[in-house]
Image 1: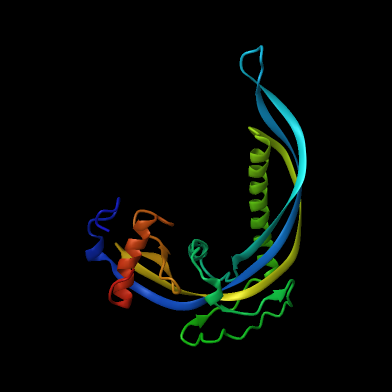
Image 2 (image 1 turned 180 degrees about the vertical axis):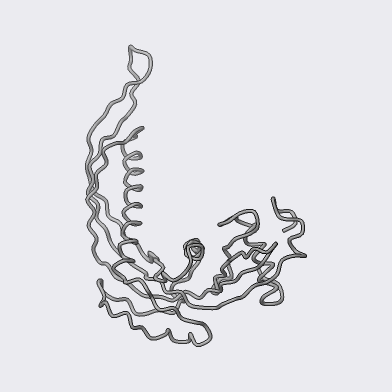
Length: 241
């Protein structure tokens, strides 16, 4: 921590641990297959044999591609602060198969949101999903569409040796959509420095950390992890990895 850029020199003497809370955060997990039909114009640069420079040769192309997306996670807890929701999105090291879960269900599900707490969750608070799966699916579908469009553009550049691409239109059809409600174990923690409160979260499954530090918000790599790890050691005792 002492070697990190922009770390306050008096951080360790002045930092004070704040409150800690353990809880399960609800996430909707979606699996889906997608077929994308596309049309586009691609451009290849051709060297003219009798003139200097290159000439643009545009051509129309069309085709289709298939994809399958597994475990698209969407946080169903809308009660968190904006900072907390951004931190939750930054975790990508979950082992979903080991999380507390409901059985996979065909989509869409009933609108009844009355849920019993997950088995074994008695030592951690459980937050009921505030967001209906329809809303969460729309977010997951938007992310999938963006991924498909990016992949399609890369595919056209590879297959056609295209230097430029325009007028890409895609018609996407989803099939085999399934959903599952899971609960991811988290610790929310905070610490105080110079009268200001900083927040961080710990993945209770893997121990990974995301959070804030003095002189910068958001994910700042080792800076965040080391600051939060030090405070976590104050909260939980011993050393935090």
